[in-house]
Amino acid sequence: MSKIQEIQEMVSKGKTKVVAGLVQEALDEGKQPKEILDAMIESMGVVGDKFSAGEIFVPEMLIAAKAMSKGVDVLKPLLAGDSSVSLGTCVIGTVAGDLHDIGKNLVSMMLESSGFTIVDLGVDVPADKFVEAAKENNAVLAACSGLLTTTMPALKQTSLALKDAGFKVMVGGAPVTPEYAAECKADGYAPDAGGAVTKAKELVKA
Amino acid sequence: MLTIRQNLLETIKGGNPDRFVKQFEFMELIYECPMGSFPGPGETIVNDWGITFTWPEGQVGGFPIHDEEHIVLKDITKWKEQVKIPPIVKDDAAWAPAVEHANKIDRSEKFVTAFVAPGLFEMTHHLMSMENALMAYYEDPDKMHELIEALCERELEYAAEVIKRIKPDCLFHHDDWGGQKSTFISPEMFEEFYLPYYKKIYKFYKDNGVEVAVHHSDSYAASFVPFMIEMGVDIWQGVMTTNNTPELVKKYGGQMSFMGDIDSGVVDFPGWNREIIDREVERACKNNGKLYFIPCLTQGGDYGSFPGVYEETSKSIDEMSKKMF
Image (cartoon, rainbow over all chains, first blue to last red; front, side, top):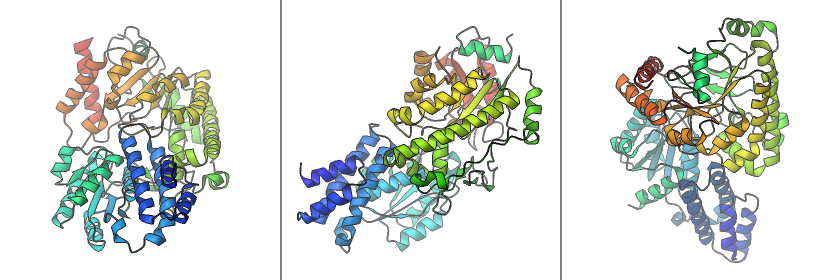
C-alpha cells in the first residue's frame, strides 16, 4: 500500500492520531502537498457517500473529518497562497430564530473537507448578517440551515436576500424539501451532509 | 366501557380494547417532581449541571448553548473535574407538591407517571456538545463509559427518590436517539455504550412498582427496537412515520407497543388545521390497527406547540375510535 493510500485509509477510519504523521512522512518522501490534499478530499468523498447511503453514522463522519483536519494542519503552511487548492469561500449558518447547529456543523465540516474555505456564522443568524458576510468574504456560496417548521419563513427570507445580493445559495434542514428549496429560490438542496458536498461542488463549477 | 387504564393494558397486551388509547390520556405526569430546571419560552437559564439553556421567544423548544464559553465538559479525559454532578433533591418540602398531586390520582383510571429527562445520551451532548460527544466514543471510549456510568448512577439515585415519594406505576423517560431518518449512532455503538445502563435503569423502575415503561425518542430508531425490548421498554412514544410504524407493529407487537405515527412537524405548525390532523390520524389508525399502537403526536408530552393542536388531535382520535371499534 502506498503512503497516499495509507493516508486515505486512516482518514476514512478516523485515525486522528496517525494522519498528521503519515502526511509528514508522505511529504518527506517527496509527495506534493496538493496531491496529498486531493487524496484526503477523495477519501472524505467516499465517507460522505457512505453516510448518505446509511452505511456509517454521524460519529464515523465526524471523526474522519477530524482526522483529515489533522493532516490539513500539516499541509497548510505549504499550501498558503496556492489559490488552486480552494473551491472558494462558503458562508454557512443556521437562520434567525433557530439554534440547531448539528446539521449545520456536519455540512460545514464536510464542505471544508471537500476543499471549501468555510466562514461559519453560527446559529440564529439574521438574513442581513448572511448577506454582509457573503460580501465581505467574496463568497462563492452561501449555505443556510433551518431545523424548525417555525423558522422556515426565516430560511426563505435569508435565501431570497442572498439571491437578491447575487450569491449562490444552498438550503437544508429536516423540514426542507426540494419543493420548499425551490420556493426559497435556492440554487441547491441536499438531504444530508454527504449530498451537500456533491451539490455544492456542482454549484460552484456551474 | 373499560377504564383508561384497562384500555391501555388491553391495547399493549393484545387483548380487547374498546377504543384507541388517546395520546397521553393514561399518564398522569407528575411534573412537580424536583428533577431539574428547564427554561420557559423567552428564557435563558443555567441548570444544576451548569449547562446554559435558552428558549428563543416564539420558537418551539429550548436548546443548550455550546460555544467555547458555555460548554461544561471541554475535555472528556477530565470529566471528573469538569462535571459537577448535582445532588438529588431529598427534602420533603421540595417533593410535597409532587406527592400531593400523585395522591389525588385515581390509579384505577390513570397511571401515576414519573417523568425523566434528559436521558443518558442527551446528557452527554448537553454537557459536551453533540460533535465532541460523538467523537469521544472513538477517541476516549473508556472515559465515555465512565461518564455514562456516572450519569446512570445518578439516574438510579433519582429513581429511588421518585419511587419513594410518588410510587409511580408508569415511567415516561426521554432520550432522543436520532434525527428523522437515522439514529445518531450505530446500533453497535448503542449496544456497547447505552444498552447495559438502560437495562439497569428500566429494571430498577420495574422492580419497584412501575408497570409500564414508556420511552420517548421522536426520531428514527427502528433499528434500536430490539434493544428497547431488551431494556424493558413497553411503549416507544414518538415513533415517527419514517420508521414505517405499521411494519414495526406487525413485527414487534406483543413484545412492545408504538405510540405516535402522527408527525408533529406535519400537523403542529402555525398554519395548522383540523383537516390535516384528520388526514394524519385516519392514516395512522387505519395503517397501524387497534393493537400495540397508540395514535399520538410525536412530540414528547401531553401538549402541542401551537394552541389547539393536541386537543383537536384527541378529538380526531375519538372519531376514529367510533368508526373502527
